[in-house]
Amino acid sequence: MKQKVINNFLWRFMERCGAQGVSLVVSVVLGRILGPSVYGTVALVSVFMIIMQVFVDSGMGNALIQKKDADDLDFSSVFWFNMAMCGVLYIIAFLAAPFIASFYRVPELTPIVRVLSLMLVVSGIKNVQQAYVSRHLMFRIFFFSTLVGTIAAAIVGIAMACMGFGVWALVTQMLVNTAVDTAILWITVDFRPKREFSSERLKALFSYGWKLLASGLLDTVYNQLRQLIIGRMYAKADLGQYNQGEKFPQFIVTNINSSIDSVLLPTMSNAQDDPAAVRSMTRRAIKTSTYIIMPFMMGLAVCAQPLVRLTLAEEWLPCVPFLRIFCFTFAFYPIHTANLNAIKAMGRSDLFLILEVIKKAAGLVAILSTMWISVMAMAYSLFFTSVFSQIANAAPNKKLLGYSYLSQLRDMLPQIGMSLAMGAVVYVVGLFGLNDILTLAIQIPLGIAAYVGMSKAFHVESYNYVLDTAKSYLSKAKTKES
Image (cartoon, rainbow, N blue to C red; front, side):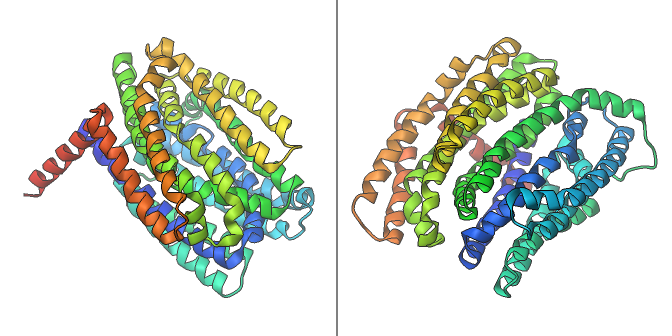
């Protein structure tokens, strides 16, 4: 099982790295061509698209993964339900487009909303295929479908931007990405929906899934609320800078954290009758993922200014403070992911929903308290609510698994201490006033050497685990090859 989990994590990680890597490069290129204002325009629409995307899943994808004996009838029932749901959602989006444009006082948003909403229909086709792949730990398939879709979309987006299509270059890029990804997934996955439907099966799945739907909706609306308010109360360029500040840290965290997230739920669900095994998986996920993510986030925060100036240009420098705030916020995402997956795997979607209500109530207070001050104040509030969410997400697992937040914090302390020390070392290099390329050329290898050196010197368990796992995997791969 360990070997299977590692194999699937690596495939998922490579898929995320490839897709996010291409997307990041494209974002840099398009950012130079189109500028903050155009990005801000698409961000206005994306807020509503992301919220509606939650309904595409309806929590059913996770329900299919979590259910022990899910069969073709379950998958087919969810597929036809999703298709009907997506049709209704598209009609709603089409009719709501003028009102969205009026809300932002940007008339040109109407056709953009109507075209971009086609993603909802395509996503409905893809959703069940994704659940099937996740349930059966077949993440190799994701690698090819996502990477081809991302590359095809990149080519189209850059070509259209160079030809002067402006905002439509971004819109088309997003549509092509989803369409190609879905088409390849449909071809490569064995599952095909049958002409059968069971309302009883759907009802049973929905009894678990609706709580995750409500939780996902709360989480998504809350996460998009800041952007919605920024887009309404401040300039489009401000929203563009805020979004661009999220991209670099999101690139790193999404690659690692979403890879772990995808593999954790099906793996933990298989062991849901053994709390000790789920606790062991949760602990290992927190220790290993924070060991990898925290130094990345610290290093990126310290190197932010020369990196942005070198990749995006001077006009994007206002995104640097946002980038640093997102780095410190995302650094603790593994603790959210591991705890929430453990709760879902244990079948406690009711606790999952209660946690979301508590966290979002606290977050809403933070947003309402800062929205009148500045965009920066709203960004800072995100970090403080993230700390509160860590404690809330870990609380149920003290009882469910015997793994409290204090125990989790103790497991993370070596990674936190080494990341802070590494950040201090790298920060000193930036004080020498060297050009951006030379500064980064010194900071990056110095940061890696400092972190690995401390890991060896202090005999950090996570370092040894990562090293031993890598050696074991490579050894088995060579044996299999020979």
